[in-house]
Amino acid sequence: MLNVKSFVFNTLQENTYILSNENRECVIIDAGNFTETENDEIINYIEVNGLTPKMLLSTHSHIDHVMGNAVLHGKYNIPLAACPVERAYYNKVWMYAEAFGIKFTQDMCIYPSIDLAEGEMIKIGDDELKVLYTPGHAKGHVSFYAEKEGFVLTGDTLFRRGVGRSDFPGGSYEQLENSLKNILYKLPDDTVVYPGHGPTTTIGEEKRNNYYITE
Picture 1 (cartoon, helix red, strand yellow):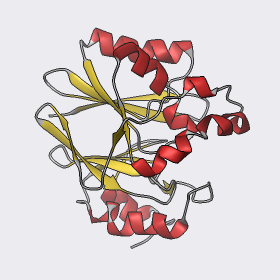
Picture 2 (cartoon, rainbow, N blue to C red):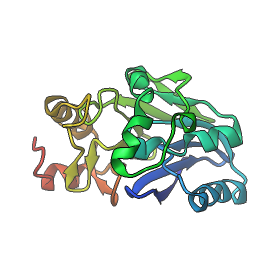
Picture 3 (cartoon, rainbow, N blue to C red):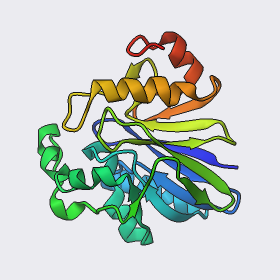
Picture 4 (cartoon, rainbow, N blue to C red):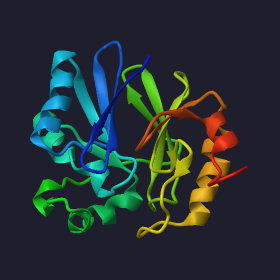
């Protein structure tokens, strides 16, 4: 059974998640920690709870979701896994930082060493996450679905009463609409949604109340 711990990091108020199991193995999803205080917060949680990080997972490569990867990779020597479509964007992510007032340089970025494919099952001990390809906000955007526990991490594809912007490089409203209608909205209504920004919600709540995308 996977336990979910969330953090809110950096100036863009991004949600970073740690998923851990009874054997204290864990993965870190969208590491947005950037300041020394934020680095200490996430590392302290890992250490105090005796967790063993196995992997960094990325929903997409936008700056606010990748800022902490290098620190955690350096600390725990764990690989970064992402959709291969996003590889090209990792070469540019540091260039976009200045537009958001973020001092992030090329040497602060690490690159994915594991490719994630649609439908792939990521093992965390005896637990699993299913990779869902959900582009639209970013060309190589993926979500992570824990069917047994009944939750999905949607990155910036789906928020509570909102959706991710589709006007960034690699974005597409048509793809975003398809990702919601034909992938995420097909999950059970009681599936808990852990988004990349903002509070949790459920698939059913968004199908009923999210006016950005309707069935």
